[in-house]
Amino acid sequence: MSLLRSLSIANLALNHNLLLAPLAGVTNHVFRLICREQGACLAFTEMVSVNGMVREGVKTLALLASSAADRPLGVQLFGDDPALLAQAAGMVADQADLLDINMGCPVRKVVGTGAGSALLKDTARIAAIIRAVRRTVTISLTIKIRSGWQCGDDTWLEVGRIAEAEGCDAITLHPRSRSQMFSGQADWSQIARLKELVRIPVIGSGDLFTPQDCQRMLAETGCDGLMVARGALGNPWIFRQTRELLEGKEPSPVSAPERAVTAQRHLELCISELGEAVAGREMKKHLGWYLHGIAGAATLRRQVHGARNCKELQTLLEQIRETGA
Image (cartoon, rainbow, N blue to C red; front, side, top):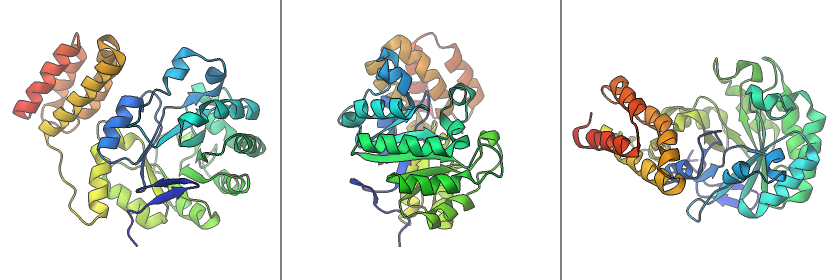
């Protein structure tokens, strides 16, 4: 059986199983479009706070900006109150094809509110959250978790059973504990065990930085799909290259000019959607990632950092596109 295959999450039928993860401060509308152009079949919004959503904060609602080209779309919510999560889910259900609840974010700002991976310390609350949201929405419902709060916790096993019993349509596992943050190595064997435990689709995440990593996770774990996170930063081609590899082809290399062309398109879309002032600030971090692997990257990053406006960023990218450096 081919490792690249269609993926059905309840009534959501995806053409293949390579997904873009939700990333705070990264996966806005523009970045999702760039990754879709390179082959991501499902992309997620940044995490949306249910507290902000219910209070109708303008900044929170802006995270839901989308378009017809940005489908199918997954919306990820975070919070710790079952009633608020259900209320927010109802508010966004008509803007999404899939709703995901974050139960794995390890950052202090999120954990301090009782949300994200803090929920892994209270599996009864996890059950209540899924139950409340499931009663509210009919679209595909998933959760994204880590292994547990501390290294060695087997919380993911219990949460997997709960998720299936309470009506989740799929579960994504990043097999690190909260205490690990992003250090050490993700234990992919946990993904394989979870796949054996539940009948709903299991999506694997963690340490997917190359097409070969993606191929290996699918082969070793038997998971139904992959959710690429940090591996897509400055590297939207990971979706195209992984698809090529899984189809038995040699992944096509990405030249410096191609990097510049994609970065230019990213910048243009950003300017169109956010305006030049915001786009300039937003794109500096992305350009730092896009420049990875280009000759003289350190010098180029200093030039990016010193750029005073979008025109100077465009000039720099044009130079890279024309000269390859």
